[in-house]
Amino acid sequence: MRTDIGVSAAAYNDVQKLESVHALPHHPKLLALYKTLFADEVLVHARHIIRMISPHPAVFPTPPHQDFPLIQGTQNTWTCWFPLGDCPRELGSLKVLRGSHKLGYLPLKPAKGAGAIAIQTCPWEEHEDDWIEGDFALGDVLTFPAFTVHKALPSQFPDRIRLSFDVRYQPLSEPVEEKSLLPHCGLTWEQVYENWHSDELQYYWRRLPLTYSGWNPKLLQPERRIC
Ligand SMILES: O=C(O)CCC(=O)C(=O)O
Ligand SMILES: [Fe+2]
Image (cartoon, rainbow, N blue to C red; front, side, top):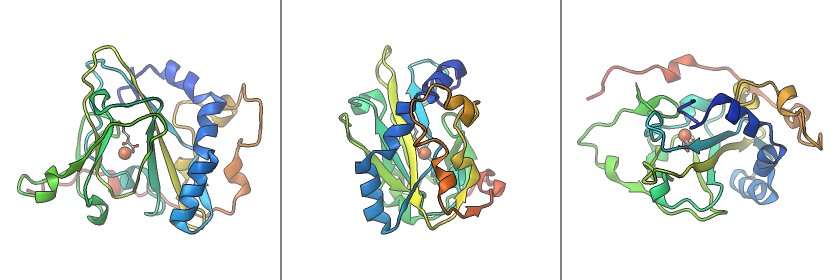
């Protein structure tokens, strides 16, 4: 069981090999959204995370975190989170901390749940409680920039799986960190592509004029308590 994705590695790899999983993030409506937002051509990160969050006791709701230390590259990378199917908040949808995109990088502490990091917050910090949450219907997406603090609600259902995607988009002219172009599983791209019918989306980023930024491990290091 991989607690960050909710199922076994074997089940996860099967899902990662689906052509439809890798085609959906290139939907014209999503590309048009980010093209408008960035006023630039769009780079879709190739690394999509598919969550199959089960009510298994070893699976913890995703703790409050910023994506920037986990993804790096340009600070103008946006996350697009969407459930596959209706996802009322009782099924453990994602919520965001109002205004947190303006806070910049926040110090971390280790945590249980996806990403294994949480931001440190102090009890007297006013913004800590101002969360925005909602019920998602099929087709809804939640999108936010790299410093937005977000976390998952706990699932209230003992027998349902919350199925969702985390996809990332950035302006094409800004640097990308190379892991964003690797599969999010133990497979190589060759293995992911094994049963695909079309090669149109295979290695699509290799045909793009990309610039790269390095990985800074310090961004993921927990800091001593700030309060
Ligand atoms: O779906 C989750 O529980 C976590 C999603 C997330 O952190 C993200 O999309 O960046
Ligand atoms: Fe995240």
